[in-house]
Length: 383
Image (tube, rainbow, N blue to C red):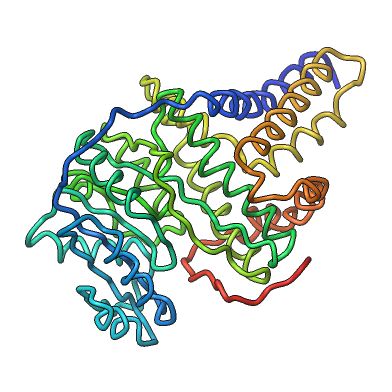
């Protein structure tokens, strides 16, 4: 490879690696939001598709944790089970939507917004039917969104479930890196947070303006980008934590495939114009989106290293960047990820990357374009 081509290759693969490194460093010094107080009129909006097994428990937990006077609205969306009946019995206001041709969470949220519009609350908090957030978290989200006047995203994480095996633990750690560590970095850099689908609080004006009705498989991501373009940059609130059980082992790959295919497609569409927007927060958001999922990024870097002359400066610089990234990921695990991923399973990360290779090949050949419900059954086992 010629000298000029080597430097071009370094720039192409080194820039996204540097972006991740900067975010991982910034994550250790997050921006703290000003203290928020008050009791805004709050509506908890819960989209539910075939959640009859768990929805009653979710509603009861929300009734116990929600700020006084909060309205709980469940949207039973294209359900084939008794989700609506179970939600009503648990005490939630429940509406049913039946439109098989327009499936997906975005349509359910839009349907719920229409119901709320007759008596708009100050703040809407969106929470998935399989998620939980504590009392302080709900109150903090509502107060922050009301005071700041912008969407607020909690730290949406998966509960550690070691009995489900190493694969699920590694996927949970990747989820934590994206939804907590890099979100903290984005906040410190002054960039918009990513909306991650659950534990999201919207002032009514933002919720009313959001382009909800969509079948996009990453509708939360696209909604957040659209709001940022409107000047309603989402904000990250690490002090509020939303928890969900991980998918069982058999469902982990389909879940990751759906999200990462959607992310790659959205990034390809949105990143260039965000980078060129001329406004710092949007520009960094565009750079963030231009970074492939971490496992794919490392695989690309390793492939680039194999193409470079080992005695050349580009090789040395890229190798140094990779070593820095590995160190920062280890520090991130030590501070944030010990409960999610036991130390003994760190050595399995290369196998996890190889496991995801078919996922990335499918992204080019057969990308996921339709929404499907994630199976979160209780069975599992070691991998």
